[in-house]
View 1 (tube, rainbow, N blue to C red):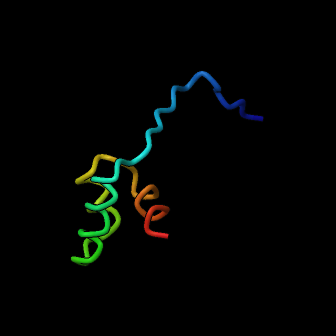
View 2: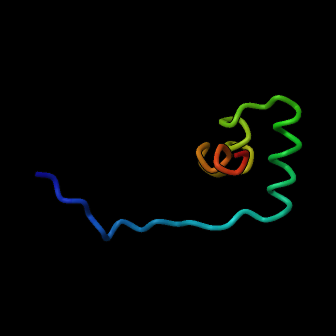
Length: 52
């Protein structure tokens, strides 16, 4: 059985209202979640959750 290393640092931060506005604007321009994530330097799943 594999043991999960709980010492792996995880870095989470909340999106700013400016970033949320950028996500909305880029999504309206038909940018993919992956492209938006690369531009904002975050994970694509963050973008997907934000757009829900």
